[in-house]
Image 1 (cartoon, rainbow, N blue to C red):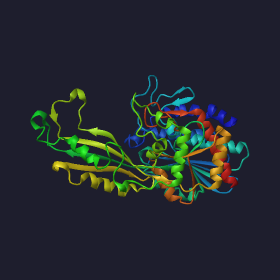
Image 2 (cartoon, rainbow, N blue to C red):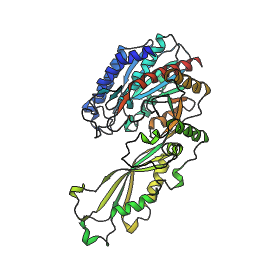
Image 3 (cartoon, rainbow, N blue to C red):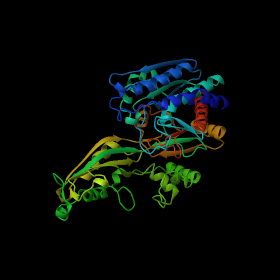
Length: 462
């Protein structure tokens, strides 16, 4: 652990500082990414660092398929038997407003042991963590299997380029017995956390049109049904406004007993931190006081959020007009085992059927990504994770689902059905990926690197 910590201080953190300065926004947020060159700059930075700190038996290539974002691909021969795949990404979410004074998405700041800036924790650190773990194993003369490190640049756009690369690199990746994904979260910074599931997602736009142009509200109200009211009626078909619970049974799944028990254990360990980690306004309370239910709400139950709107003027510009149209961006999170594509078709049918007052209602979904549910954890992996967590953090490991959607996991799970998965990461309380003031908890990342090394060694021994 001492060598890993020193290597992070001397070699990793300074390069992550340089990486944060690069506005390598994912293609979904920068359609001109190829012309702007920021993604290429991030890959070049990471590749040059890997070459400077190359480990024995390492080969590196920046793979470029036509009209696709590049992939940084490393192969490291091992002295142990077996095959491992480690995953991460270098593309980033956009800027977001609300950064603290003196901080910013492309302005790296180290304060209180945290490196602030966009992408460091989500998850630019991954390739550095992976190579640092292998470097430590080789220095300590501990065996590891053959390892492939795949770092993509399209994850924040749904990993739509990843299947093509998995196909192109299949002969070189082989069939891993272990997949390590470094793009997830942790419930606290006190122990190692493994992710057992990820929710699916349907993203789409619900539009309600009632007029061809806006009219005076004093003249039309009471004659023309207001578009927001119609939208409210339509949303009520999906979730109950009082409880927030999604209504259609098709969007629910049976929660496995093991996951319910893990949720209870997580609730015991985290306590009210489960909800206090969010920036609630004064007086605001969570949806329920049952902490285990809160864990399951954000990991195994469908939930609807309105994440954007069109057709609503800013308050300063809002006249007495009954507006012609309202459009709402809907985000429906799905349980890990519910198929997103069929659910999206059902959601469209539910929202568009029998529109109130004959309004023109349309729901177009742009993303339907299924979730992921981990296979049963092998005894050797469970033991290795727990032993390493105690060794490096002083506490046993914890397992919990995550509420977000990471499409690559469903892809990898389908492609390598016989593999064991350790999906973990550094996104803990207040780390705020995708939002303002994102940070990487440096000490936690150092210890996580040591845990990755231990699990690779346990895999080789197994």
